[in-house]
Image 1 (tube, rainbow, N blue to C red):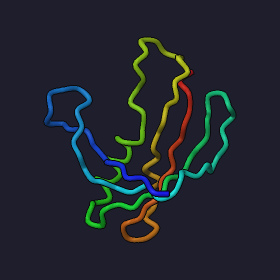
Image 2 (cartoon, helix red, strand yellow; image 1 turned 45 degrees about the vertical axis):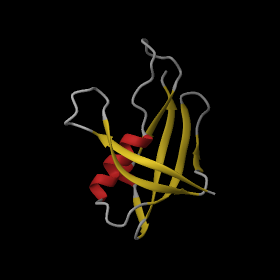
Image 3 (spheres, rainbow, N blue to C red; image 1 turned 45 degrees about the horizontal axis):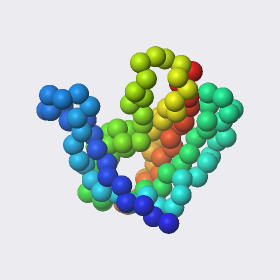
Amino acid sequence: MAAITHLYEDDKTNPYRDASKFVATVKLLGAPKIVEEGNGLDDLGVILYTMQVPKNLPLRRLRSAIAHTFSSHGCGHSYDCCGCAVNNARTHDLRVIRRGQVIFPVSIGRNY
């Protein structure tokens, strides 16, 4: 199973809040793997993604785009402790497993 997705990053030149600009089209290889079980309350665990990326995409820009695309940017609730899931792409743990292929974990928790 492979899924195609697009990576985006913050567009600092756009005056609109939360504006994004396209970085690359990538392929998710297989289903994400659960690598850490959560406690079922505020910690929902860690999943690991494997992704095929353009070989000429600089690692710094790839990390920025993965963080922007796979991390939550807040829910629409006007109050805290709503229980919505919060994703955090741990790009500092991103590893290149072969040229054009990377793995990275995403931590998932709840806003409590």
